[in-house]
Length: 181
Image 1 (cartoon, rainbow, N blue to C red):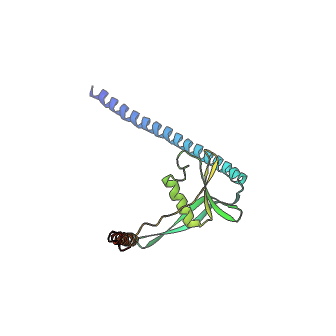
Image 2 (image 1 turned 135 degrees about the horizontal axis):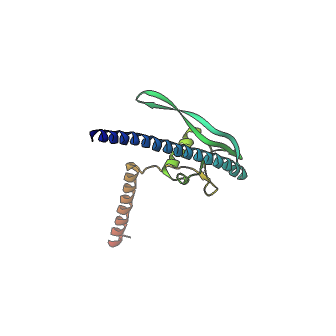
Image 3 (image 1 turned 30 degrees about the horizontal axis):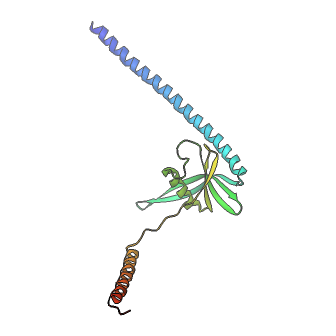
């Protein structure tokens, strides 16, 4: 009887190991297939983006343009890279074009896309930024503006002017009440 229990336990352990190995192999296959499908779709989208850009009057100057970025962390420099999809030209203006083909990131104001475009704007210093949305076949021109915060000094100046105007208005009102005017 004890021997049968040991055999069942061994069969159970071997079965679990073989089952886990089969599960991992199948999962790896489908993950790899998913990556391949996404890579093929991205390549297709970039080819379509090139056609859309050229049809819209942009001339492609460079593809996958890399720029070096040095990040200093705790006094040590770390070299990294930024790579944009395209550098394009229209008229005299040079643009960085970023292609988005998935459900996420196609909106220019989506946080990760906005940060990516801001980084490109800072690193490449183009005349403009383009977000090529392959879902709706549109090219969005994107620019950034950073409103300056209202300073305490400005608020103080406005308050002084407002109080001065109020004081003069009260003075004029009092003069009219005393019939001096």
